[in-house]
Length: 249
Image (cartoon, rainbow, N blue to C red; front, side, top):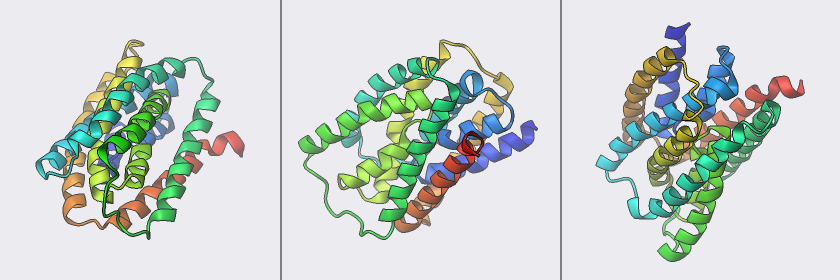
């Protein structure tokens, strides 16, 4: 079972690193499908792997000069503030509510991506001051959401960054950099609870490091912006339906 789980996490890290995401939105459902408790193991482990995936991808993107560090700063600061607060509330909400919120967030983000897949790529960014106000405010909410649901927030950062003028590939690359901070901040909020399966954590960490490096290279050199959006949207909607199926049917 561990070998199959590790291979699956490797594949997910490869895919999500191309999208500028840490992958927690799929890591968490996968861990629950393999029998791990959502709150005690799946969310904290998913957030940790999210951080590692994002770190590995961000290193590649930074070297490729695809990350807007200055533009990311407002989102990083506010997401770091919001993520531990969201993590605190995880243990106060029933599991069914968490799954419902998780699914709604993914379907919303996925639909937005599919709807905008054929749009022309942005050609100019909003002025930095205006952009910082918008992205910083959104970062606080996204950070809270990522800590609450264990998602890392990348699936919300990418559409928001495209909306303020980032080209898709640069939005994905910069998102990976931001998700690194928001995920690790959320993880620290869960780490105080001390619930981990260390064998799974070690094997899956190795898998995501390798998968994210390969995924980053493929995204930069092979993927078109429209294809990235389409994969992003379909994947989010599919997982949301699969994850919440037992609640409603």
